[in-house]
Image (cartoon, rainbow, N blue to C red):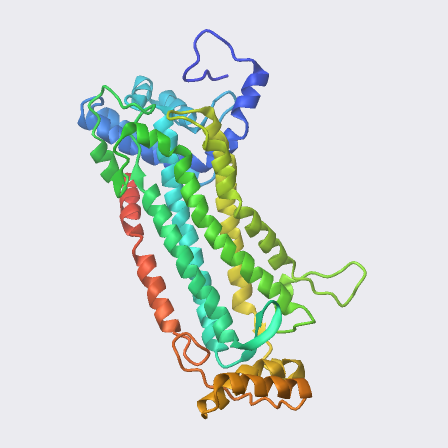
Length: 446
């Protein structure tokens, strides 16, 4: 059994080890490729300050790239008795390269290793989430344009209120995602700062070149103060969690609407048959299980920031093992949101709309405001027009004119979808994903 990096002459009680390790090894498997990237950058810097020879660096890079390929194939494992991903990578290097493998830890701690791993992992995952959000956005805009002329009831207090349209409904969620994308961009920028070189949180007596590792890893800048770099553990995940929760909130509301509009009492939309399930005793049922599960998952995701805060909010500066538990919440949540976005996009692309909703007379009263506005436009005082139409409705003599004309920005007849698309494109292009991708490819020489 491999010894711990820190283990000396005392053997840890197996029950204590089981408790302290928890799910850390399971979570660390997600970090393996990023631990390798950090090690390639770090070893390049060590060679520049003469802590490694050029030959030693080249040997380390060759083996690290092989370990990266193993991780990319999903074949990376953490052996029994090995504490974490950092220990496993160092063990694999030492087996192949002997003393050269032991040199790679110079000038760093597992504290700044896990920090850089998490930041690289999160940066990559935010790119995937943003791509997913952009795909859902494009699907919503396409449906908004497709059904822009199909009217539907708008509601306040769940009471039929005023005319709306499917163009507005789909487009509203598209624009909502632009705000979510701003949250994601802010999270990305705060995440995309280099903690490597902060070691255990107090720097190193080695003459480390942190600017070099910042550039090699494609970070926008570094966490300059080494104490703050360590204080960023948990804070970075919390900030990202707020962004994930914002996306999840939009998806949960969309799922609620879709479930309600799909029900027989509304009959506004039809979900794809393959996204519904049946009943064990009621042969007519087509339950919107996918959206119901999506709603529940996204509601739970909105609690993620609070879960993280409750772990980290009463910790002083410096590292504490409490922070390990955040990984057990954060990494699964990231994967769950990606899956929810994928499912929502699939259904939205295939959702069909009832184009004859307004044939039902129960919706006639929603045109009352249109009639009030027509009378007011013809010169009748607004309050008099309001009273007249109200009395007509009570008397049962109100006859709606269902031909409406809304022309102002963002209304039924002027959706401004082109402006919403431009806004999304500007936000998305502002991430600068290319810089990180270029840097990572250069480290791997791809």
